[in-house]
Image 1 (cartoon, rainbow, N blue to C red):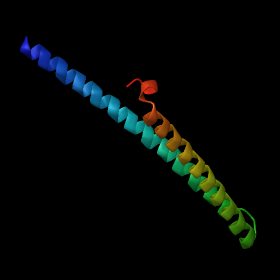
Image 2 (tube, rainbow, N blue to C red):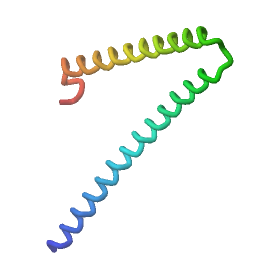
Image 3 (cartoon, rainbow, N blue to C red):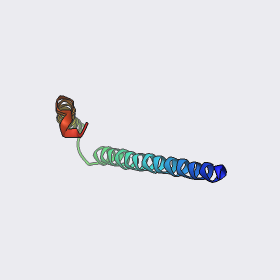
Length: 93
């Protein structure tokens, strides 16, 4: 009887570990897509038939835009986490 419980525990533990690795695989997959998109966009800009000054202006504008979007997203996430900490009853704690 004890061996059956140990076998069940081992099975559940293996299943849990597989679920965690599936989540990690998804994160790596999404990170790969994101990195590929960034590299592709950079390559597209670099091979575009534009003079150097226009290319530098375009790159500068895109970096500023990305920085603004990132800052906005970070602020939203901070506000969400602050509001969740301020009112734990909404989270269910």
